[in-house]
Amino acid sequence: MTKVESHTGSVGVVETQIVQIELPPGGLQLECGRSLPRLDVGYETYGELSPARDNVVFLCHALTGSAHAAGRHDPDDETDPAWWDEMIGPGKGIDTDYYHVVCANILGGCRGTTGPKSTNPGTGHPYGSGFPPITVGDMVAVHQLLLRHLGIERVAAVIGGSFGGMQVLEWAIRYPDTVDRCICVASAASLSAQALAFDAVARGTITSDPDWQGGDYYESLRGPARGLAQARKIGHITYLSPEMMHSKFGRERRESEGAAGPDAGSHFRTDFQVESYLDYQGGKLVKRFDANSYLHITRAMDEYDVIEGHDRLEEALAPVSAKVLVVALSDDWLFPPEQSKELAMGLLRSGKNVSYCGLHAPHGHDAFLVDVEYLAEAIRAFLPWVGEKPKARHSLGEAPARRQGVVTRREFDIVVDMVRPDSRVLDVGCGTGELLSLLAGERNTTGMGVDIDVRHLIDVVDSGHDIFQCDIDAGLAMIPDGAYDYAVLSETLQVVRKPRFVLQEMLRVAKEGIVTFPNFGKWRHRLSLGLKGRMPKGGAIPFEWYDTPNIHLFTLRDFGELCREDGIDIVDVVCLPEGIVSRCLVGIRACNLGADRVIVKIARRDAAGPGPRSDIECRTLRG
Ligand code: COA
Image (cartoon, rainbow, N blue to C red; front, side, top):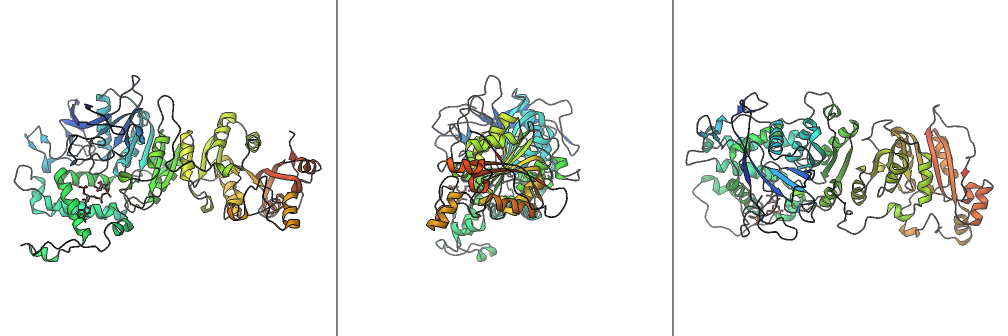
């Protein structure tokens, strides 16, 4: 990259470099069995490469992307915008003050890397129909060759959205030793039948355009512009959510452009804005993309299937050693969030370090290219900083502290005491991840958090832990039975809609559970309601009744009874009293009256059915 000038937040003016990669005598061997005698790769870089060469972030572009991911080719030219300028630059999600970003045009492309329009050295003419079929594996092999050419052995991270995410996966599976972290945004382990259908129709519009000429159009005066534009229009429909399409255009019409053209079909054109928009987008792609590249790349994308050759996804993902962040976009119907979740679950079942993030993205699939709230923050937090890592910044103020500050350090210390060293812990409702950090620091535990709030997710990945963003009330289906030694539920049971189900789920995924909660049976709360007729407030319940997250009010004794009914053993109970009266009450074993907060270790009872009625044996702590 020649960095001519630099703007705040921009990498400035850049240019695409094209290198010829040195190949062995047989050329570049492709998965189809054929080979390419010459390989050129177009790439751009942004940010300085560190002396240790350990700050490289490689970007894998989507279907019609290019090496031009950030900055401008010409200060005054806006016709070739970089596809991820929002994300890359000083202070941005992928911060070029820290990282050396490399983005290469993919094999089969038309923006510098060898593809169907390149000259075939054997004939001296463009490949056209003679270009061999390519796969995602071939594309990633070319990424590897480029890095070797640049003298880079290992990258800090590989990031890709959409089809780029598939390349990221292939990289993580095939070249696990060359990457530390992977980020897949709005992607999947394979395309859905619906997405395959759209691609098939799009390819059909190109190949049925007479100007395609069987793929050998480069040396003629005509090319399949109409077919390619039509293919793009079909694709573009899938990039926007129905709501975004509606809000952009509704049924609005443009000014009439007068009489219809000579083409009979033009009588059937409408003046709806959406048609004009699709025409515009189709025409725009024709100016910068090649129809044969579109055919080859969509076919490679359609054929890609991580699970191929394996019985289960987790088996296919077994070679992955990088930490992975999977990001799903809520209103993406091309790569639906369920597919991203499936991928994250496959990684989890395969025992990998994975975090799953579901972002609100009303725009649809294209949201990752435009502006999706928290995406930059999530990426920034997940990337392994070289040097001192700045704290994650939330775009909308501070994340709410775990349970809004109601958890005390003392409570965490007791939880830590209950956990064996070197065990695996799942922190259910993990908040900003303080407990995970404390456990890792003091008990050398490994594990993961679960939380619904994306701001918590950013803090947790920023601290280096894994987290699965989901609603605990929907269950922990992504986690296999018995995957953890402990499942911790700290100050959360009273805020979930289905506490009974959540407890069952905890004891399905872990051998033991540790539950902490405020005790609504405390004497002061009873007095407040009984004598004053007011809902209790104070101590472990700092909220007004109209402003409380607590939807299930229960006492220590209630909890004990639920455990008895549901076949749960209470292994250990620690009561935390607040104030002299409470301490005295707990001292004489009147725990349900004295305890402000309770920490209970539970386990599944071996024998089925409710256990015998018995008082809960509390352990009190001094100090
Ligand atoms: N008639 C004609 N043109 C119209 C129009 C109408 N009724 N309404 C908007 N446009 C034009 C605008 O003038 C603007 O032109 P410009 O891009 O030359 O400035 C363009 O359409 C705006 O497009 P829009 O989709 O509304 O912009 P966006 O900010 O929401 O999205 C992109 C930006 C780059 C993501 C999007 O335009 C795009 O190209 N998406 C495809 C990217 C892609 O390949 N995704 C697939 C990943 S696999």
